[in-house]
Length: 599
Image 1: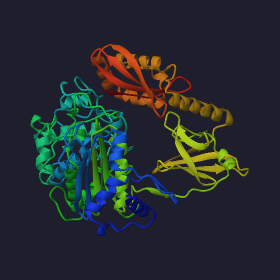
Image 2: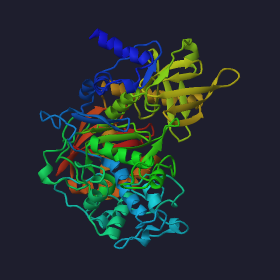
Image 3: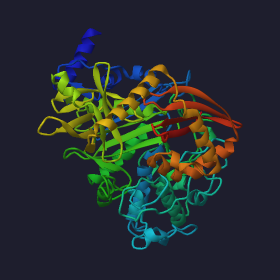
Image 4: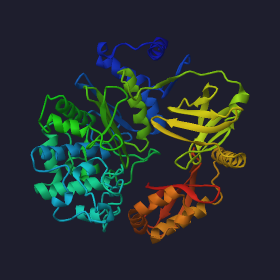
């Protein structure tokens, strides 16, 4: 055992064995036995828990993985169980692909484009029959197009969809588009001039779903089966919603972040194009291999090489026509993540024939799949997703103390650096703190995430500003004056004490009751919310209100815990069901963060 551990550590501190000289079994073993941390510190031996240990810690019952290497599926393996005390996950176990449905659906659209039946840059209203995108001031000069919809640059609303319980009535596609009962989401409308801003919109994909129905007259599950799934060999996959009863034994049961089954089982998504695909990692690997083959001119089963190239060419903010795109070197990749109730998944595929797909049956699976993808990237020596190496510097404590304070970042959030015992921690108000370590006299880094905070000093050595970088996301801003800094530090320390003592904010229950009542009535008090929360609530209000009205009167609120970020979680019991609820109150008594989820 000690020899195995030493070998794994050696892989991290010395050049790894070339991936092409290592067997698939060895690759599987390294992924299974040693999850790589996000940051490796020179000279330190990292802690590397096993995959099964992390699954237990994060309460993820099942994980399924497929890895593409040298243009083929090198291995596919299931880990854990499809349900508590149930059968094991296998490579054939079905999961909901959630938003990975989008790039698979986009392939069908592009197939029709290649056949001359559709044009990417035509006004979608030229094709739509039973429903039209309502024109308004934003469409006066530019119209909504399929290129815009599939790249999330059409200016359309409705980010995503909550799905429907097993026995709930299902809306038609037109009802979803207009946000009318029994739809539980808002109407899909243009709220930004098309082509001017990236705005993720699952609602746009429902527009495209309706468009394909009008143009082809074929139900979407059959159209997808005939044009994409069967030709690519995705034999286990289907866009049928709900999944046929005859296949009820084939899927992994969805769980929430607490390890409890999602009530009623998998949600149904009549929004099939953006969220409705049932599949396996191996089948998604076949999708990726199909795109890779088209890009390299080796296959035109679905789309031509030129259309494939257009598919992975960024339109706005690195998003192509279906998948997102990336690549820190000449090696480019296409990717997409997915998040449905109880399912989290991720696809990454390099254009040169490498990649991986990870699917989980838990709301906490998002964190696990990031960790597994990072480990795969390290094992296969990808230029992206792999851990970052940092060097720890020796810096006098008095020099580090000058960074204590609050900083107003350019997106309006406040980042606080404070002391927790004898260590520095940094965090946004309402978020969990992260320990910070010096990499120089003017920069700090985190070990648990790829975060770097670098500081600007004046000629007297006083700190004037911060540059905060989390992965590729960079923000910056000035240091707050001393009085405001002390105020934010004091607030963060009070929150830390509540987390330690597990005592809710004295006003959180009353604020939550008011929030629930306001949403149920359709008239929430936006003045009691942060601007960000108010914007999100306005967008999602129709669906939220419908959910609360259907649940009936609120009977009780039971405090559950204070999360690591300081928001108070409650179980809300209604006449006809229950929700897990959470909110975070700032020092002005405004609600900064709030969410509701079924339980």
